[in-house]
Image (cartoon, rainbow, N blue to C red; front, side, top):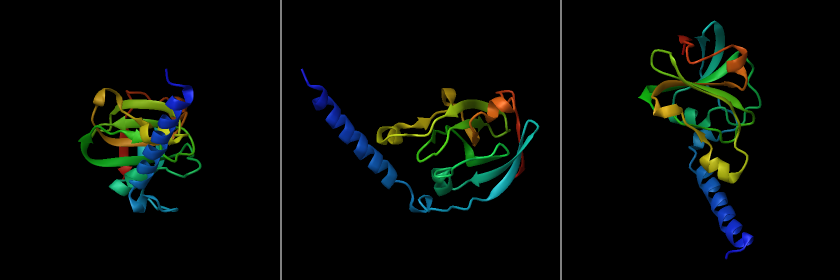
Length: 164
């Protein structure tokens, strides 16, 4: 029978390697200390939000990494050219998020509440959040945790793009 150390050491080494590989595969322009995203405005039910727009692969990879906070009237919207299954990862996040997936018509198709940031090398490789049942989304909105409860956002909510 293997000892605890004989089991844990290989797992720890594998987790570190997976974490390093994950970080090394991030596009170079996503790693910049300061990234300026285009900005826009959306309306979610009656709530108006100023949003950072992530529409390129590098911008979507970078997302809200390294940002320290997100006020209730702001968010980040990920825009895709077509509807697709969109996993979201929480690499280098500093705070938890509510994540909302929308179809091309702005209908909510899934909500994940209070998604925590990754904390370890193993989580870095595996800390993606999937939208339920593989539903296809055209937009994904990240807002600070608690937003969906505070503003009563549900799967019956509707997003209207004002300027993106």
